[in-house]
Amino acid sequence: MGDAKARELEVKIERLLPGGVGLAHADDLTLFVSLAAPGDILRVRIDRVKGKIGFASVVEVLQPAPVRVEPPCPYFGRCGGCDFQQLTYQAQLDAKVQIIRDCLHRIAKVEAPLDITMHASPSEWHYRARANWQVDSANKLLGYFERGSNRVCDVEYCAVLVPELQEVLEQLRHEILADAPGEQLRDIDAVVGDEGVSVAPPLAGFKTNIVSRRIGNETYYVSAEAFFQVNYELLAALIAEALGDATGKTAMDLYCGVGLFTLPLAHRFEQVIGVEAHPRAANFARRNVESAERGSSTTGDPTNAASGNVRWGTVQIVTARVGDWLGQHSDSFGSVDFLLLDPPRTGCENRDIAGILALHPAQIAYVSCDPATLARDLKKLIAAGYSLDSAVAFDMFPQTHHVETVARLSNTRN
Image (cartoon, rainbow, N blue to C red; front, side, top):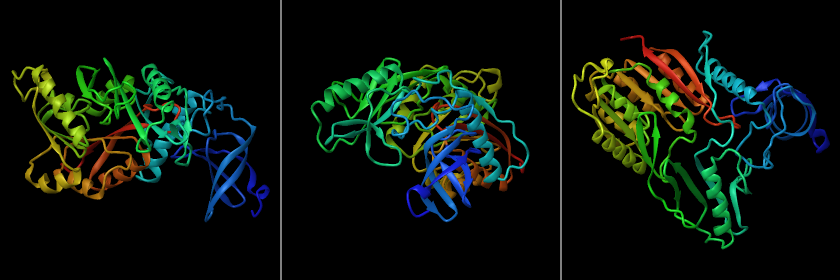
Protein backbone atom coordinates (compact mmCIF):
# COMPACT_ATOMS: atom_id res chain seq x y z
CA MET A 1 0.00 0.00 0.00
CA GLY A 2 2.78 2.38 -0.85
CA ASP A 3 1.17 4.86 -3.28
CA ALA A 4 -2.10 6.71 -2.85
CA LYS A 5 -3.91 4.63 -5.49
CA ALA A 6 -2.97 1.36 -3.75
CA ARG A 7 -4.47 2.73 -0.57
CA GLU A 8 -7.93 2.87 -2.13
CA LEU A 9 -10.04 -0.26 -1.72
CA GLU A 10 -13.55 -1.44 -2.50
CA VAL A 11 -15.31 -2.66 0.65
CA LYS A 12 -18.73 -3.57 1.98
CA ILE A 13 -19.78 -2.17 5.35
CA GLU A 14 -20.90 -4.99 7.64
CA ARG A 15 -22.26 -2.99 10.56
CA LEU A 16 -21.65 0.09 12.70
CA LEU A 17 -19.40 -0.04 15.75
CA PRO A 18 -19.10 1.99 18.96
CA GLY A 19 -17.88 5.41 17.93
CA GLY A 20 -20.17 5.31 14.89
CA VAL A 21 -17.64 3.92 12.40
CA GLY A 22 -18.46 1.27 9.85
CA LEU A 23 -16.79 -2.15 9.99
CA ALA A 24 -15.27 -3.71 6.85
CA HIS A 25 -12.55 -6.23 6.00
CA ALA A 26 -10.10 -6.09 3.08
CA ASP A 27 -6.44 -6.93 2.34
CA ASP A 28 -6.10 -8.76 5.68
CA LEU A 29 -7.11 -5.55 7.47
CA THR A 30 -10.00 -4.77 9.76
CA LEU A 31 -11.18 -1.38 8.54
CA PHE A 32 -12.97 1.33 10.48
CA VAL A 33 -14.73 3.59 7.97
CA SER A 34 -16.08 7.00 8.97
CA LEU A 35 -19.51 8.24 7.81
CA ALA A 36 -20.56 4.87 6.41
CA ALA A 37 -23.92 3.08 6.39
CA PRO A 38 -24.38 -0.65 7.07
CA GLY A 39 -24.70 -2.39 3.71
CA ASP A 40 -22.83 0.30 1.74
CA ILE A 41 -20.42 -0.77 -0.99
CA LEU A 42 -17.75 1.90 -0.96
CA ARG A 43 -14.45 2.92 -2.38
CA VAL A 44 -12.44 3.98 0.64
CA ARG A 45 -9.06 5.52 1.23
CA ILE A 46 -6.96 4.10 4.05
CA ASP A 47 -5.75 7.10 6.01
CA ARG A 48 -3.84 5.28 8.72
CA VAL A 49 -2.82 1.73 9.62
CA LYS A 50 -2.04 0.42 13.09
CA GLY A 51 -1.13 -3.25 13.09
CA LYS A 52 -3.98 -5.09 11.41
CA ILE A 53 -6.42 -2.21 11.83
CA GLY A 54 -6.93 0.45 9.17
CA PHE A 55 -8.78 3.73 9.55
CA ALA A 56 -10.46 4.79 6.32
CA SER A 57 -12.66 7.48 4.80
CA VAL A 58 -15.19 7.29 1.99
CA VAL A 59 -13.97 8.25 -1.50
CA GLU A 60 -17.05 7.14 -3.43
CA VAL A 61 -20.35 5.44 -2.67
CA LEU A 62 -20.44 2.70 -5.29
CA GLN A 63 -23.72 1.18 -4.15
CA PRO A 64 -25.63 2.88 -1.36
CA ALA A 65 -27.23 0.79 1.36
CA PRO A 66 -31.03 0.89 1.58
CA VAL A 67 -30.71 2.87 4.82
CA ARG A 68 -28.44 5.54 3.32
CA VAL A 69 -29.93 8.98 2.69
CA GLU A 70 -28.50 12.22 1.37
CA PRO A 71 -27.25 14.28 4.34
CA PRO A 72 -29.16 17.59 4.31
CA CYS A 73 -26.43 19.59 6.07
CA PRO A 74 -23.92 21.32 3.76
CA TYR A 75 -21.25 20.93 6.43
CA PHE A 76 -21.65 17.15 6.75
CA GLY A 77 -18.33 15.35 6.52
CA ARG A 78 -16.30 18.44 7.37
CA CYS A 79 -17.96 19.51 10.62
CA GLY A 80 -17.15 17.18 13.50
CA GLY A 81 -20.63 17.38 14.99
CA CYS A 82 -23.15 15.10 13.27
CA ASP A 83 -21.87 11.78 11.92
CA PHE A 84 -25.15 9.87 11.40
CA GLN A 85 -26.90 12.19 8.93
CA GLN A 86 -26.25 9.63 6.17
CA LEU A 87 -28.69 7.22 7.85
CA THR A 88 -32.47 7.12 8.00
CA TYR A 89 -33.66 7.95 11.49
CA GLN A 90 -34.82 4.38 12.12
CA ALA A 91 -31.39 3.12 11.03
CA GLN A 92 -29.79 5.51 13.52
CA LEU A 93 -31.93 4.11 16.32
CA ASP A 94 -31.25 0.51 15.30
CA ALA A 95 -27.51 1.15 15.13
CA LYS A 96 -27.43 2.67 18.60
CA VAL A 97 -29.29 -0.28 20.12
CA GLN A 98 -26.84 -2.64 18.41
CA ILE A 99 -23.87 -0.62 19.69
CA ILE A 100 -25.16 -0.82 23.28
CA ARG A 101 -25.84 -4.55 22.94
CA ASP A 102 -22.40 -5.13 21.40
CA CYS A 103 -20.64 -3.28 24.26
CA LEU A 104 -22.59 -5.15 26.93
CA HIS A 105 -21.73 -8.49 25.35
CA ARG A 106 -18.11 -7.81 24.35
CA ILE A 107 -16.95 -5.68 27.29
CA ALA A 108 -19.30 -6.41 30.19
CA LYS A 109 -19.60 -10.11 29.20
CA VAL A 110 -23.38 -10.01 29.50
CA GLU A 111 -24.26 -13.31 27.84
CA ALA A 112 -28.03 -13.47 28.32
CA PRO A 113 -30.07 -11.74 25.59
CA LEU A 114 -31.13 -8.30 26.76
CA ASP A 115 -34.17 -6.55 25.35
CA ILE A 116 -33.09 -2.91 24.96
CA THR A 117 -35.94 -0.44 24.56
CA MET A 118 -35.10 2.68 22.57
CA HIS A 119 -36.87 5.99 23.22
CA ALA A 120 -36.74 8.00 20.01
CA SER A 121 -36.36 11.76 20.18
CA PRO A 122 -39.64 13.58 19.48
CA SER A 123 -37.58 15.91 17.28
CA GLU A 124 -34.99 14.49 14.87
CA TRP A 125 -33.77 18.04 14.14
CA HIS A 126 -33.78 21.33 16.06
CA TYR A 127 -33.55 19.57 19.43
CA ARG A 128 -30.27 20.88 20.86
CA ALA A 129 -30.94 23.47 23.57
CA ARG A 130 -27.31 23.79 24.67
CA ALA A 131 -24.29 24.47 22.46
CA ASN A 132 -20.55 25.04 22.57
CA TRP A 133 -19.20 27.01 19.60
CA GLN A 134 -15.53 27.34 18.65
CA VAL A 135 -14.03 30.69 17.65
CA ASP A 136 -11.13 31.38 15.27
CA SER A 137 -10.66 35.11 15.73
CA ALA A 138 -7.76 35.44 13.31
CA ASN A 139 -9.73 34.01 10.40
CA LYS A 140 -13.14 35.24 11.62
CA LEU A 141 -14.65 31.77 11.92
CA LEU A 142 -17.40 30.61 14.28
CA GLY A 143 -18.76 27.08 14.46
CA TYR A 144 -17.55 23.64 15.47
CA PHE A 145 -14.25 21.82 15.16
CA GLU A 146 -13.69 20.09 11.85
CA ARG A 147 -13.74 16.31 11.98
CA GLY A 148 -10.54 14.96 13.54
CA SER A 149 -8.88 18.37 13.92
CA ASN A 150 -8.76 21.58 15.94
CA ARG A 151 -9.55 23.72 12.90
CA VAL A 152 -12.83 25.60 13.11
CA CYS A 153 -15.53 24.75 10.59
CA ASP A 154 -17.36 28.01 9.92
CA VAL A 155 -21.09 27.34 10.38
CA GLU A 156 -23.85 29.79 9.46
CA TYR A 157 -26.73 27.40 10.11
CA CYS A 158 -26.91 24.32 12.37
CA ALA A 159 -29.91 22.07 11.77
CA VAL A 160 -29.81 20.44 15.22
CA LEU A 161 -30.05 23.69 17.20
CA VAL A 162 -33.36 24.83 18.63
CA PRO A 163 -34.50 28.05 16.87
CA GLU A 164 -33.55 30.23 19.85
CA LEU A 165 -29.91 29.08 19.66
CA GLN A 166 -29.82 29.44 15.89
CA GLU A 167 -30.81 33.09 16.37
CA VAL A 168 -28.01 33.51 18.92
CA LEU A 169 -25.51 31.92 16.52
CA GLU A 170 -26.54 34.30 13.75
CA GLN A 171 -26.31 37.36 15.98
CA LEU A 172 -22.91 36.33 17.34
CA ARG A 173 -21.62 35.86 13.80
CA HIS A 174 -22.91 39.26 12.77
CA GLU A 175 -21.75 41.27 15.77
CA ILE A 176 -18.62 39.43 16.90
CA LEU A 177 -16.94 38.22 13.75
CA ALA A 178 -17.48 41.52 11.96
CA ASP A 179 -15.40 43.06 14.74
CA ALA A 180 -13.12 40.11 15.53
CA PRO A 181 -12.57 39.72 19.30
CA GLY A 182 -9.20 39.27 20.89
CA GLU A 183 -7.22 36.06 20.60
CA GLN A 184 -8.22 35.09 24.14
CA LEU A 185 -11.74 34.12 22.98
CA ARG A 186 -11.64 30.45 22.05
CA ASP A 187 -15.19 29.20 22.56
CA ILE A 188 -18.70 30.27 23.52
CA ASP A 189 -21.30 28.36 25.54
CA ALA A 190 -25.04 28.95 25.32
CA VAL A 191 -28.12 27.38 26.91
CA VAL A 192 -31.82 28.04 26.41
CA GLY A 193 -34.23 28.45 29.30
CA ASP A 194 -37.97 29.00 29.43
CA GLU A 195 -37.47 32.75 29.62
CA GLY A 196 -34.39 33.38 27.49
CA VAL A 197 -30.82 32.41 26.66
CA SER A 198 -27.65 32.44 28.74
CA VAL A 199 -24.32 32.97 26.95
CA ALA A 200 -20.80 32.64 28.37
CA PRO A 201 -18.76 34.72 28.15
CA PRO A 202 -21.23 37.64 27.88
CA LEU A 203 -20.99 38.90 24.31
CA ALA A 204 -22.84 40.92 21.67
CA GLY A 205 -25.55 42.00 24.07
CA PHE A 206 -26.04 38.53 25.56
CA LYS A 207 -25.53 37.96 29.28
CA THR A 208 -24.37 35.01 31.35
CA ASN A 209 -27.66 35.23 33.19
CA ILE A 210 -29.46 32.50 35.09
CA VAL A 211 -32.34 30.89 33.21
CA SER A 212 -34.81 28.28 34.35
CA ARG A 213 -36.32 25.23 32.72
CA ARG A 214 -39.38 23.31 33.82
CA ILE A 215 -38.93 19.54 33.46
CA GLY A 216 -41.90 17.48 34.66
CA ASN A 217 -42.82 18.78 38.11
CA GLU A 218 -39.45 20.40 38.80
CA THR A 219 -37.88 23.74 37.93
CA TYR A 220 -34.13 23.86 37.30
CA TYR A 221 -32.02 27.01 37.32
CA VAL A 222 -28.87 26.94 35.20
CA SER A 223 -26.56 29.17 33.17
CA ALA A 224 -24.21 28.66 30.25
CA GLU A 225 -21.40 28.10 32.75
CA ALA A 226 -22.85 24.79 34.01
CA PHE A 227 -23.68 21.57 32.17
CA PHE A 228 -27.29 20.71 31.43
CA GLN A 229 -28.69 18.06 29.10
CA VAL A 230 -29.20 19.19 25.50
CA ASN A 231 -32.49 17.46 24.57
CA TYR A 232 -35.25 18.75 26.84
CA GLU A 233 -38.00 16.72 25.18
CA LEU A 234 -36.66 13.41 26.53
CA LEU A 235 -35.67 14.49 30.02
CA ALA A 236 -38.92 13.64 31.80
CA ALA A 237 -38.84 10.10 30.37
CA LEU A 238 -35.13 9.76 31.21
CA ILE A 239 -35.75 10.75 34.85
CA ALA A 240 -38.73 8.40 35.13
CA GLU A 241 -36.72 5.45 33.83
CA ALA A 242 -33.71 6.18 36.04
CA LEU A 243 -35.78 6.39 39.22
CA GLY A 244 -38.30 3.66 38.41
CA ASP A 245 -40.38 2.94 41.51
CA ALA A 246 -37.47 3.46 43.92
CA THR A 247 -38.40 4.74 47.38
CA GLY A 248 -36.90 4.42 50.83
CA LYS A 249 -34.76 6.03 53.48
CA THR A 250 -31.45 6.99 51.81
CA ALA A 251 -30.52 7.78 48.21
CA MET A 252 -27.29 9.05 46.68
CA ASP A 253 -26.92 11.01 43.46
CA LEU A 254 -23.31 10.87 42.28
CA TYR A 255 -22.05 13.34 39.66
CA CYS A 256 -25.32 15.13 40.38
CA GLY A 257 -24.64 18.22 38.25
CA VAL A 258 -27.29 20.89 38.81
CA GLY A 259 -29.58 18.35 40.48
CA LEU A 260 -31.50 16.88 37.53
CA PHE A 261 -32.15 13.64 39.44
CA THR A 262 -31.64 15.04 42.95
CA LEU A 263 -34.89 16.96 43.01
CA PRO A 264 -37.22 14.09 42.08
CA LEU A 265 -35.29 11.78 44.42
CA ALA A 266 -36.04 14.15 47.30
CA HIS A 267 -39.76 13.45 46.90
CA ARG A 268 -39.16 9.72 47.39
CA PHE A 269 -36.46 9.40 50.07
CA GLU A 270 -36.00 10.72 53.60
CA GLN A 271 -32.38 11.61 52.90
CA VAL A 272 -30.68 12.43 49.60
CA ILE A 273 -26.98 13.19 49.15
CA GLY A 274 -25.75 14.69 45.89
CA VAL A 275 -22.04 14.77 45.07
CA GLU A 276 -20.64 17.00 42.32
CA ALA A 277 -17.04 18.05 41.64
CA HIS A 278 -17.77 21.12 39.51
CA PRO A 279 -18.30 24.05 41.93
CA ARG A 280 -20.56 26.02 39.60
CA ALA A 281 -22.84 23.03 38.97
CA ALA A 282 -22.92 22.17 42.68
CA ASN A 283 -23.97 25.74 43.51
CA PHE A 284 -26.82 25.48 41.03
CA ALA A 285 -27.82 22.17 42.60
CA ARG A 286 -28.04 23.89 45.99
CA ARG A 287 -30.08 26.72 44.50
CA ASN A 288 -32.43 24.25 42.81
CA VAL A 289 -32.84 22.29 46.03
CA GLU A 290 -33.56 25.44 48.05
CA SER A 291 -36.09 26.62 45.50
CA ALA A 292 -37.83 23.24 45.47
CA GLU A 293 -37.83 23.10 49.28
CA ARG A 294 -39.62 26.45 49.47
CA GLY A 295 -42.35 25.07 47.24
CA SER A 296 -42.70 21.72 49.03
CA SER A 297 -44.58 20.68 52.14
CA THR A 298 -42.64 18.81 54.79
CA THR A 299 -45.73 17.29 56.38
CA GLY A 300 -46.65 13.63 56.17
CA ASP A 301 -45.14 10.32 57.15
CA PRO A 302 -41.59 10.24 55.71
CA THR A 303 -41.54 6.45 55.75
CA ASN A 304 -44.56 6.14 53.49
CA ALA A 305 -43.20 7.46 50.19
CA ALA A 306 -45.31 5.10 48.10
CA SER A 307 -48.48 6.74 49.41
CA GLY A 308 -47.43 10.11 48.04
CA ASN A 309 -47.31 11.67 51.52
CA VAL A 310 -43.61 12.48 51.37
CA ARG A 311 -43.22 15.97 49.93
CA TRP A 312 -39.56 16.59 50.54
CA GLY A 313 -36.68 14.81 52.25
CA THR A 314 -33.44 16.14 53.71
CA VAL A 315 -31.04 17.00 50.90
CA GLN A 316 -27.30 17.63 51.13
CA ILE A 317 -25.20 18.76 48.15
CA VAL A 318 -21.47 18.09 48.48
CA THR A 319 -18.83 19.75 46.29
CA ALA A 320 -16.17 17.06 45.90
CA ARG A 321 -14.76 14.50 43.52
CA VAL A 322 -16.86 11.38 43.81
CA GLY A 323 -13.95 9.02 44.55
CA ASP A 324 -12.47 11.34 47.16
CA TRP A 325 -15.75 11.80 48.99
CA LEU A 326 -16.71 8.12 48.90
CA GLY A 327 -13.25 7.14 50.11
CA GLN A 328 -13.69 9.36 53.16
CA HIS A 329 -17.34 8.70 53.97
CA SER A 330 -18.53 5.34 52.61
CA ASP A 331 -17.67 3.52 55.84
CA SER A 332 -19.81 5.90 57.91
CA PHE A 333 -23.06 5.07 56.14
CA GLY A 334 -25.44 2.28 56.94
CA SER A 335 -27.56 0.85 54.19
CA VAL A 336 -28.13 2.88 51.03
CA ASP A 337 -31.42 2.02 49.40
CA PHE A 338 -30.78 3.60 46.01
CA LEU A 339 -27.69 4.98 44.28
CA LEU A 340 -27.83 6.90 41.02
CA LEU A 341 -24.74 7.82 39.07
CA ASP A 342 -24.47 9.95 35.94
CA PRO A 343 -20.73 10.25 35.23
CA PRO A 344 -19.06 12.06 32.32
CA ARG A 345 -18.31 10.29 29.06
CA THR A 346 -15.14 8.78 30.53
CA GLY A 347 -17.19 6.83 33.08
CA CYS A 348 -16.12 6.05 36.64
CA GLU A 349 -12.62 5.85 38.03
CA ASN A 350 -11.64 2.65 39.84
CA ARG A 351 -11.82 4.40 43.20
CA ASP A 352 -15.33 5.60 42.37
CA ILE A 353 -16.46 2.00 41.79
CA ALA A 354 -14.67 0.88 44.96
CA GLY A 355 -16.47 3.56 46.98
CA ILE A 356 -19.84 2.60 45.49
CA LEU A 357 -19.29 -1.06 46.33
CA ALA A 358 -18.34 -0.14 49.90
CA LEU A 359 -21.83 1.34 50.32
CA HIS A 360 -23.58 -1.90 49.26
CA PRO A 361 -26.56 -0.06 47.73
CA ALA A 362 -29.63 -2.22 47.25
CA GLN A 363 -30.32 -0.71 43.83
CA ILE A 364 -28.16 1.17 41.33
CA ALA A 365 -29.22 3.27 38.35
CA TYR A 366 -26.33 4.08 36.02
CA VAL A 367 -27.03 6.85 33.49
CA SER A 368 -24.41 6.89 30.75
CA CYS A 369 -23.68 8.78 27.53
CA ASP A 370 -21.04 6.26 26.37
CA PRO A 371 -21.91 2.56 25.91
CA ALA A 372 -18.26 1.43 26.05
CA THR A 373 -17.40 3.03 29.41
CA LEU A 374 -20.81 1.99 30.73
CA ALA A 375 -20.07 -1.64 29.86
CA ARG A 376 -16.58 -1.40 31.40
CA ASP A 377 -18.03 -0.17 34.70
CA LEU A 378 -20.96 -2.61 34.65
CA LYS A 379 -18.49 -5.48 34.34
CA LYS A 380 -16.98 -4.46 37.70
CA LEU A 381 -20.35 -4.05 39.38
CA ILE A 382 -21.60 -7.40 38.09
CA ALA A 383 -18.42 -9.11 39.26
CA ALA A 384 -19.08 -7.68 42.74
CA GLY A 385 -22.51 -9.26 42.99
CA TYR A 386 -24.91 -6.99 41.10
CA SER A 387 -27.28 -8.22 38.42
CA LEU A 388 -28.10 -6.16 35.35
CA ASP A 389 -31.89 -5.98 35.38
CA SER A 390 -32.52 -3.68 32.43
CA ALA A 391 -30.95 -1.34 29.89
CA VAL A 392 -33.03 1.36 28.24
CA ALA A 393 -31.76 3.73 25.55
CA PHE A 394 -32.69 7.36 24.91
CA ASP A 395 -31.81 9.09 21.65
CA MET A 396 -30.76 12.36 23.23
CA PHE A 397 -28.48 13.16 20.28
CA PRO A 398 -30.16 12.48 16.89
CA GLN A 399 -27.92 12.67 13.79
CA THR A 400 -24.90 11.57 15.89
CA HIS A 401 -23.66 8.20 17.11
CA HIS A 402 -24.05 9.29 20.74
CA VAL A 403 -26.75 7.70 22.88
CA GLU A 404 -27.88 7.88 26.51
CA THR A 405 -28.43 4.60 28.36
CA VAL A 406 -30.04 3.91 31.72
CA ALA A 407 -28.88 0.63 33.27
CA ARG A 408 -30.69 -0.65 36.36
CA LEU A 409 -28.94 -3.08 38.73
CA SER A 410 -29.85 -4.86 41.95
CA ASN A 411 -27.66 -6.30 44.70
CA THR A 412 -27.89 -10.10 44.67
CA ARG A 413 -25.85 -10.46 47.87
CA ASN A 414 -28.13 -8.52 50.21
